[in-house]
Length: 138
Image 1: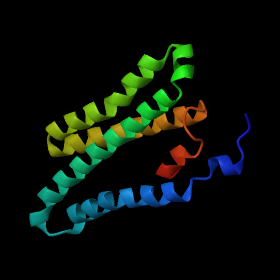
Image 2: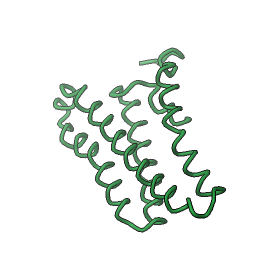
Image 3: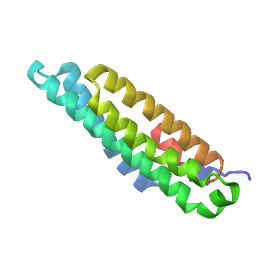
Image 4: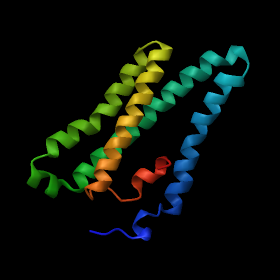
């Protein structure tokens, strides 16, 4: 199936809401880098917590993709795999919150990358909108 430019165009509502979702990441990172030293610990904790929440949200979206196409997933026998993959981001994010600060951030960042790859795979297999991976700047 050939995708048109319209198929890859991110809806304006998704652009705005996705963009607003980036604000806490930027704000907390700025506080860590250039804020007063007494706020670095709090900003780091807030950044990690927000990252964990967003990863859980992204995993939920994967669950939605899997269940939205449940008939096709069942037909291919991969519903269990896709649902299992969809719960991993929240479990890994929770683990990252239990880790010390630097390893926790590495775990979160790596998981964001893996979820992006899952998003791309879902879009390429028509189980997610073609524009969905573009929300992360691709």
